Length: 133
Image (cartoon, rainbow, N blue to C red; front, side, top):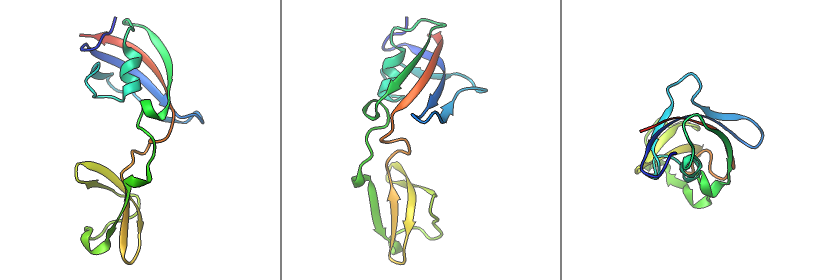
């Protein structure tokens, strides 16, 4: 049985409430992580605890157990002259140590959104535990 501190390997499929898939390990190596280390979102970490190799489960996570709630404080406008040249809407940039997406460019400002793209959304994962070390 998987416990906190174990390194586990899982295959997974992640979907949104509308059924659309946002990520999957299909066709790739299994995801490997140490349970309880913070390498994955909290709900995913908690979901594998107690699973045995070969077990499969489906778990739905509210935003607080996934990528958190979306917050307006993470949408930041900076003076255009302080931003790198050549930015385009949709481009990924680093805001300190955090990735952000350029969401608007005006004559005076560049607005970036540092919320995770899945923030504020409930996520459903189908998880299969394939290894424990």
